[in-house]
Amino acid sequence: MTAREPEVLISEVGPRDGLQSVRAVMATPDKFAWITALHAAGIREIEVASFVPAKLLPQMADAAEVVRHALALPGWTVMALVPNLRGAQAALAAGVRKITIPVSASEAHSLANVRKTREEMVEEVRTIVRLRDGAAPDVLVEAGLSTAFGCTLQGDVKEDDVVWLAAQVAAAGVDECGLSDTTGMANPAQVRRLFQRVRAEIGEKTGAAHMHNTRGLGLANCLAAYDVGVRTFDASLGGLGGCPYAPGASGNVVTEDLVFMFEAMGVHTGIDLENLMAARAPLQAGLPGEPVYGMTPEAGLPKGFVQGHAHA
Amino acid sequence: MTAREPEVLISEVGPRDGLQSVRAVMATPDKFAWITALHAAGIREIEVASFVPAKLLPQMADAAEVVRHALALPGWTVMALVPNLRGAQAALAAGVRKITIPVSASEAHSLANVRKTREEMVEEVRTIVRLRDGAAPDVLVEAGLSTAFGCTLQGDVKEDDVVWLAAQVAAAGVDECGLSDTTGMANPAQVRRLFQRVRAEIGEKTGAAHMHNTRGLGLANCLAAYDVGVRTFDASLGGLGGCPYAPGASGNVVTEDLVFMFEAMGVHTGIDLENLMAARAPLQAGLPGEPVYGMTPEAGLPKGFVQGHAHA
Image (cartoon, each protein chain N blue to C red):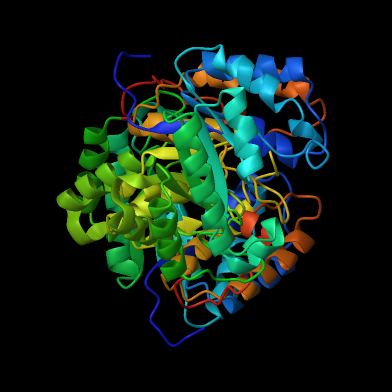
C-alpha cells in the first residue's frame, strides 16, 4: 500500500445486498467480525444493512446493531438501504452516514417490487430528503436506479426513461444517483452511453455503477463505466448474494476480482488485496455451506504482482 | 441474423486449444459433428488441430482427417497450430488455409516450452514462411505471441520485448501477429497500451487478441482490445481447455459469452447465438463428463433480446 490517494471508490454491498439474498441468517457477532475484516482491508464505503421489517427480511433484524458496530470503526462511510420513509427514519436513528434508496427505472419492476409507480417513488425520495434535511443534514442520500439496463419483467428499459428518472430524483434532492444492472442485462456500449447521458443531465450527482455478473460481463461493464468517468463501483465480497456463475442467478460483481482489475491497471483502490481475500474467512465462518465466488482468490495473484504499480 | 457484414471475427479455438488441454481423447466422428455444428452457427475461422507428434498429443493424432472434414464445409478459414517446420509441412499437406505458430515473448517460457530461444523461434518462423511461399503461397501464416502479458515462470514480460518480437516475426514474413494472454495475467490498460504499441510497429499485421479468463478479466480485456481497433478474437466454446473459473486454471474466453457481449453491444459477429449454444451438445456428447462453462448459456439470453440490434 502506498500513500497515494485512491482513484476509485469500491462500495462493498455484501453485508446488505449479499446477506439479504441468501436463505441463512448470519449471527450478529459473525457480521461484526466480517465487517471488521472488510474495514481492515481498506474498504472506505460499506452498505451494512437494509432497514425493512424483520418479518420480511429476518437477515436484517439486527440492522441498528450492525450499523453501530460499523460506525465504531474509523474512516469509512457506513450506509444502509431504505425502501421508504419509515426505513429512513430507522436508519437515521441508528446513525448511518449515507442512505441509498432503490428506485426502479422499469414501471413493471417498480409496481411488482414496491407497489408504487415511479412517480410515487420519486415522491417518497423527496419525503426522505426532507426528513434528512431536518434531522441529519450531513447524511448523504443516494438513489440507485434499479433495472436501469433492462428488466426481466418488461424487457428493454428505454434510455430516455432512465435519464428522465435521474433528473427526477436529482430534482427531489438526492446527492447521488447510481445506475444498477439489477438483472444482469447491461452491455459495455450501453453502460457508456447511459452514464454519459445521465451525467449530461445531472452532472456531478451521477453516482455508482452497480453491476451484476449474470452473463459474465460484470467487469467489462465496470471498465466501460470507468472509461466514461464513473469512479464509484458497488461490489460484493465473494460475489455473495446470488451465484455470479450459475443458472438464472444475478450475482453482484465480485469485489476481489474488481479490485484486482483496477489495481492491475494501476488504478489505486486504497484496498489491500491480501487483506481483502482474508476477509473471506469470517464470511465463510459466518455462513457455513454458503458458496463464495471469485476467480482472483481461486487463481491467486499473478507471479510478480506488486500492488500499487501498473502491470507491466 | 441480418445480411449485415460481420464487424468482428471470432476465431474458434476449441477443437485445438480446448481439446489438447483435456485428458480425454475425442473420437474423430465426434470431432466432425462438433465442427459441423460450429460451422452451422456461423463461425468463420476455426483452429481445428495441432500438427505435433501423436505420442506427445494423442488428442491430435487425427489432425489431417479433421482438417479434411473442416475443409469440406464452405465459407470459413480452416487453421492449424504448428510448433515447427515439420508441423508446417504436415499442415500444408493436409490442406489448411492458415497456420498459427506460437512464439513466446518470455525467454523463460520459450526455453521451457520448445527448448528454443526467441531468436531461434523467429528463425523457425522464417523457415516456415519460406516453405509456405514455395508450396502454398495463398495460405496465411500467423505468429501468436504467447505470454505477451506476463509469464508464470519469469513474472512480468517487458512491453519492449513484445514489441521487438512482433517486429521480428513481421520481418520474418508472417501475415498476422496476435498477442496471447497465455497465463491470464493481462489487464485492460495493458491490453490497450500493448496492442497500440504493436500496431504502431507492424501496422495492419496486428492480429488477434487471445485472452484467458483466469482472473475473470477475459471479456474486459477483449473489450479493451476492441476499443483500440482489434477485430479478431480467439475464444473456445464452453471455455473448453482449462476451467475458466477454477483454481490455477487458465481457461480460454468462452465463445458464447464473448459473442453475447458483442451482439448485445450491437457489434455484429455473424454468429447465431442460439445455434452457437446448440453446438455445446455435440461437444458434451463427444467428451462425456468433461465440464463445459459459459455464463450466457447458463443464464439464458435476456428477455426481449434480439440479435442484430444494440440493446437498448
